[in-house]
Length: 329
Ligand SMILES: Nc1ncnc2c1ncn2[C@@H]1O[C@H](COP(=O)(O)OP(=O)(O)OP(=O)(O)O)[C@@H](O)[C@H]1O
Ligand SMILES: [Mg+2]
Image (cartoon, rainbow, N blue to C red):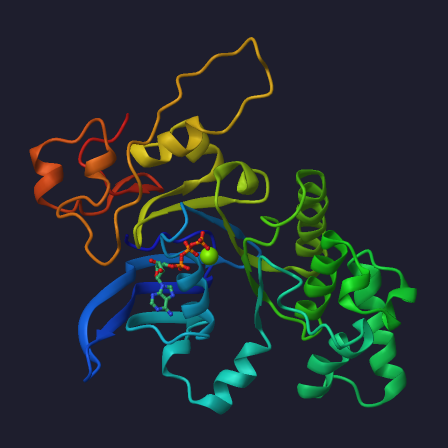
């Protein structure tokens, strides 16, 4: 999908990004196939903006997020952060840039070292990047991080297992903030938490964004989670970005049948209101062997011959972009 420029120069610009995982087999380890986890994805994120990224399991959300930070190497395409191509940086320059780009994962327990106290967890990035000149300065920084993330100062000498899931995610957020980043990939940061705790963490992330001027790529499984935090929302299906629009526009006027199906699956609290639920037929096809034409056509009730033959080029209506021959209008 062609990139969509928001107001001002984008902080991040992803151009035609592709990530292919070769599958090797046999005695010689020859390539016997490949998973196209991310296919020709392009978009921008403006400074201070949140772009929500949604899609079913396996559609390539985490792969895309990790390619942006080069935690995995993209196969092709460009990732421009403040105009600098991340994919071309050597290890030294990449390490310096990592200070400005951080990631928060779904499972806070797995991403924290169980043998380190919160003090050690937060001190590590500050020391690695030389962000405090003495012990006192480091402690002041850590206290500020705890305050920002709603953690008590007594937490410092505790270990990850002594916290609840929500508090552990607060520790992960504090650790990401320790290096004073500008951009954070939030990879399903609330998916593993109770619904009541999810709202608290999302509110915290919104407050931090305002206070620190952060920019987010916020990944989630379903459209409900990203509705309030996102300025724009992108929907992925089998490695492709199939729709991208301003949040209100996407929820009010979804163009792609896949987005419509995802939206119809969101429960509505009012029992007197009935909406037509669009059931998705079948499972997500294997990315090892995606269907020809539009990858969504085997599950789409509107599919016609053209959809079975060709992949739709990006279409746009104003700032609303989608890949579908038969958009809902
Ligand atoms: N290291 C790898 N080697 C081979 N295939 C991989 C690898 N990592 C991911 N994949 C495949 O790439 C596709 C995209 O995976 P990815 O984890 O990005 O999806 P996702 O949208 O984040 O899913 P989830 O919602 O479950 O987190 C999947 O088919 C997955 O099996
Ligand atoms: Mg994922």
